[in-house]
Image (cartoon, rainbow, N blue to C red; front, top):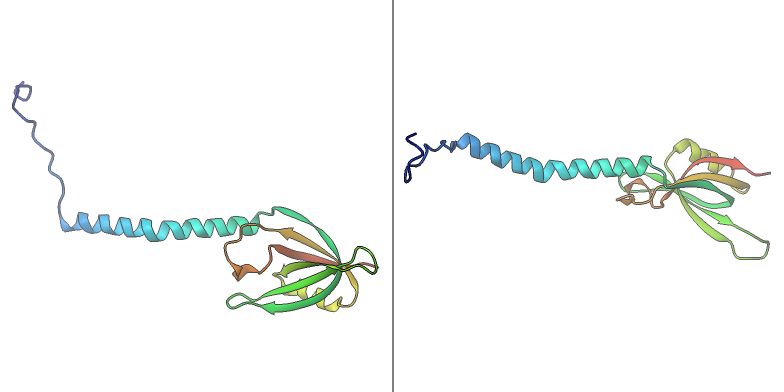
Length: 142
């Protein structure tokens, strides 16, 4: 063969060097730098808001419930848990994302209540609530 002789190079495949290819590469890099991190962040946020690390109940007296937030308003509250009369209460900070549950809590102020919550750790922003404990149900304890 003619190309097997020493000193003879095979014909090179021409590289596309048009403006269209350079624009495509630039757009691909911009897409990868901007869009991919946004999608990863949104996926992470969705995961930590829908996956519960733990769930449980706390009982006590709601001493504070207020609607807070700059972008997304959430209900933030404090539950005073008293283990024995005469001792200092332990304060449980919680977030109520639902207006219906917040209305139930407001209706039960002054009464002993049991709050059902889910703990979501790793939430990337305080937009979704100041606490990692999200209350989803309230019961009045008789």
